[in-house]
Image 1 (spheres, rainbow, N blue to C red):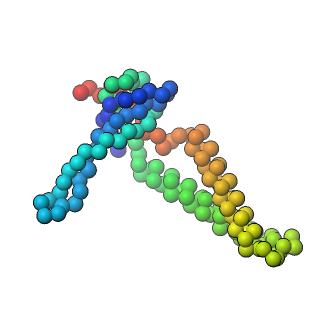
Image 2: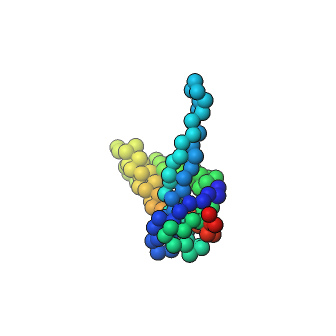
Image 3: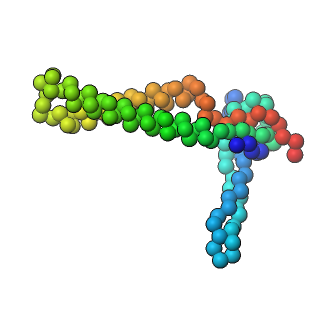
Length: 138
């Protein structure tokens, strides 16, 4: 998705861009209603824009949605796999009384660990951030 906006703030290598989007709502008795919504995007500033400049912003929301769904799937898989591991290993370790709650606790610990790894990976590789790629002549 390509949009044009105004740079409102510079934070190191990132620029905060105010983008106005048109929203169309379903019609009632009078037809559809169009409103304007202002959205602030934190973008990578590849065009060295300054505050007040108009810039073109590119973001790929389909990739962002797919990446988010994949991350949710990884957390769910970590929980289910660790439940199975806990259910199989706890009786061999001599723990049979609280096998269910301990398996659940192990699942939660593994889910939190998977979430932490995903979050660390996202900070290291911010592929989800929009890019301000050129100055716009307005």
